[in-house]
Length: 270
Length: 274
Image 1 (tube, rainbow over the protein chains, first blue to last red):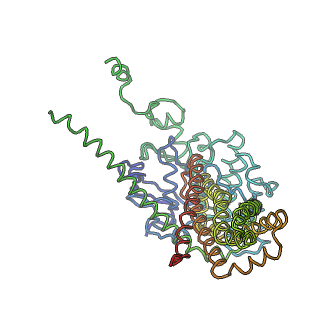
Image 2: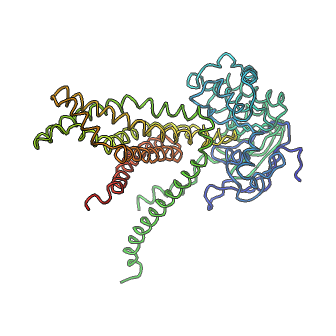
Image 3: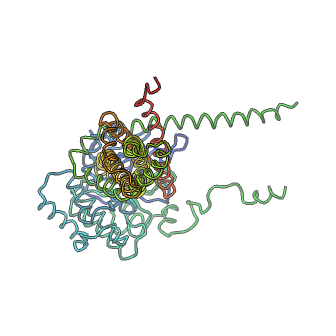
């Protein structure tokens, strides 16, 4: 029986979208309950894929993904759906239902999974919207919201059923500095208020360092560094330094792999 | 001849064969996927009817909002049939048979087929674009992550909304067509009112004329709705992907209607030459 004190445990997880090229190569990761953990890495390094493996939208080619004590790859569709009721997910651009109002978007998971009376659903949704500061926007449609507001509505929807685990896919992407701070703060506060566990996939190192308990750095399919925010700030690791300092070249090369530069010209002359 | 220069022809041939092979395999894989998808949607039928509100909403979008184009088209097709039909029939001194000519053409063929073609371009394209865009904006993924099956919540109500709307639209098309022919034939040209309606009543039987039309429109409704939801669900999640999926719905849906119409008509008129 896996240790149930951990919300998510990954052991030797390997995955690739095509068989010939592995995107993730033997990932080991432990996410303790009640913590906010960031998974960081450059674009295309497989961060979002990790979230999809945890949510069971993808299956690992080898290794184990255990969520709340259950091995995800052994679950059938019904088992997955039972597990997912305990998981909330914030998608990169919110993924709000465009034909429903803000209120109905937040009410959606409650209506789908409970038989609560309308009055109680109303109260629950109002409380969630109040928590993200958008009670006044309840009647608006998603098209009438700014990017930051949409992200906050999606956050309210993700925690509508008080999940034990919340997955955040790039929650800071494309937000102005004020919205960025607001969303970051909300992730921390909601996590602590609900007693849930949060996994934040992001490349925004500054915002993450402010709110998370622990960070994993992923590059080329492997975890290459990990630690608390203080350890990360003081890390001598060249990859972590490049990431924290935002240097354009370093262990993560500026150039996409290519033949030597000179060859491009020599070949044409010849 | 050196060995190195000989593989040129086999290489080109090989590429050609590989392309044909890959295309064939892809086509079969897609048909297989579409069939499994159809079965999966049918299995979600109870979900679509237990939550009737969802299906009624889709009947409104696919059916009610198509009313204008269907009724106006029906009226004009009927008026043209009235003119053309009378002109042709009158050459043989059969102008009085306009009622039965128009009625049979509409109920047996033009009603289901033209309404089906209009339905594919008006409602089918809208269904594909909506589901495709929901996929592109991760709304379907979000639903899956909320432990809600998009096939039950999104696809099945749209499929059944289309299947239910289509025969009703075809019937309305035929009614408007008959009315258009009446306006032109009786009111404009001066065919006798009683003869027009009397011939129609005497010459058209509920079984098989009307029922055959109804069967056709139900089959077209299933075909177009299935193609529309499948193309949307299977669309590449990009702007270009949704646009080509919408095109495939209109083209594929229209061709499916015309092909199915021929097959169904062959069955319905079997033994006609004996």
